[in-house]
Image (tube, rainbow, N blue to C red; front, side, top):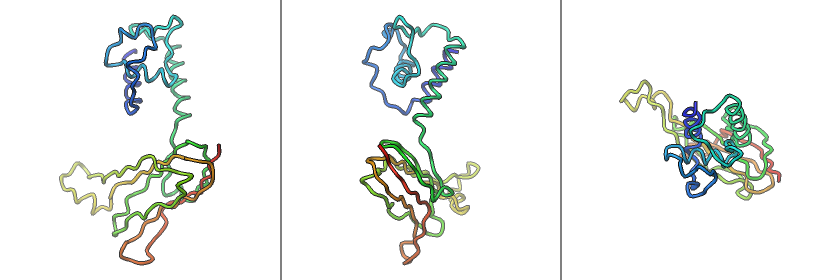
Length: 198
């Protein structure tokens, strides 16, 4: 049961870089093994694991059902509070009311089929920032070594933009595509009206 908890902690929080190893949080932290130390400290920082009243973590103690329920409940609360919604083409036209510092993502199919490219995104840079951008390539069907197969099937992959709200205010977000050599070929793939509050 303990290894299950450590595995979940490591898998969920592996993307969060931690510099917590030098910080002493638990009285028995000096006995932690390298393979779980960062995961435990990271989960403590997020409020999921708090340890025992005497200040110890108790790495060799068994986890009972009540403790497991509390940890999963805290984890569920953490996810609910840190969830980043992702919008796709069918969500175009959405109105978003967000708080300052909140994130959201837009995931769209790469429009390379037909020679389309994404135009520069339109939004107020005083209200929004792009925090990350991912260019996910096409899926090569059936593990085939014929890399053209995905393209002939029209799969050019996906693009994912993650935005973070920077300041209070309003902005429209418009993501359009066009054929660079064809005047007037621009068409909107996604748009949203965003209101950011304190």
